[in-house]
Image (cartoon, rainbow, N blue to C red):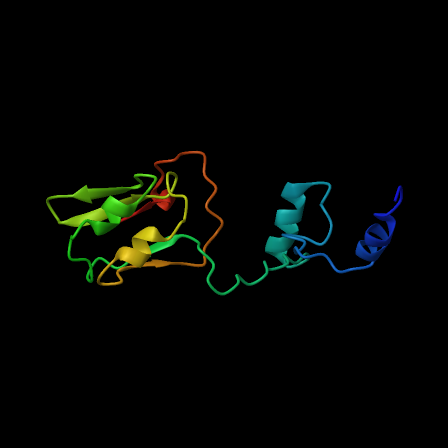
Length: 133
């Protein structure tokens, strides 16, 4: 019982990792030089793994389909969606969003969908990249 985890440890030592080595196979000693080498074609960035089916990434919003019913605002647990009364459209703050997809499920016109983009890190929560209009 004392060493019962050893078979599991040894088995995992020889399995492939579940994550990919992103952006390079080995961590570069100098990141700026690595990026310069990528620009010159001397080094290669490993592309990220494909997102699985049903992945909940950055929300996509089709303004043309939106009828301004405000159901998404009612069902959003994070209060990440704001209504713009002049245009009768919505504004989504991704920094507040928990990506639960409740707004997508309740939308009668399907103008909201979950995208595959997941690299959303930013220092400013109100940056242009983190607001969907």
